[in-house]
Image 1 (cartoon, rainbow, N blue to C red):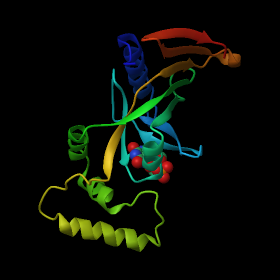
Image 2: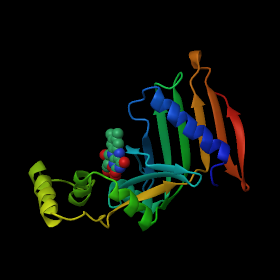
Image 3: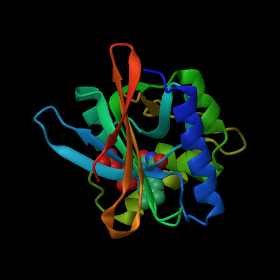
Image 4: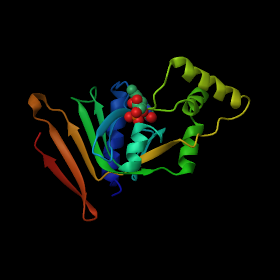
Length: 196
Ligand SMILES: Cc1cc2nc3c(=O)[nH]c(=O)nc-3n(C[C@H](O)[C@H](O)[C@H](O)COP(=O)(O)O)c2cc1C
């Protein structure tokens, strides 16, 4: 279920066009995950890498999303690019895999030092008694790694969403939108147009 060269090229071309069109945060995508008992959660994350294997984001693996992905390794992603053409959406669904430690290390090393320290200090999605507690944890991590590099925390890594269904949605006036839908079936991508 690797993306076809043509699907990847369409995605990359739309992404570049969204950037050029002044889309404020083109890499922002809604990520929906599911708990064991069927509770759905959605939040925004940033796309950090895409290739024929899928769509990569990074997070705290102990967060709500991380725990849900451990229970049910499946997700939906949604990009909405309002400034592109007459509005474009890209919808992606499929299983989720952790990235390798080497991939996570390489990306973590490119982050600003403050974000690296924040990744250690934040117990993402857990209850925080007050802001001062968080700031004290931040300062403690800052002292711990003073004068040296900040290693990647064991609770911080990435996930790759492997597309099984992907839709390019193009806005057209009067709701006469164009929907290009791809589904991975029997070892190949099947393309269909959908009614808007
Ligand atoms: C524009 C934007 C980008 C974000 N990017 C990320 C991200 O890449 N990774 C991440 O863990 N959280 C990111 N967040 C924060 C998440 O939306 C969310 O608040 C956090 O990950 C906790 O989600 P959870 O409790 O459902 O796990 C971003 C938020 C916004 C508004």
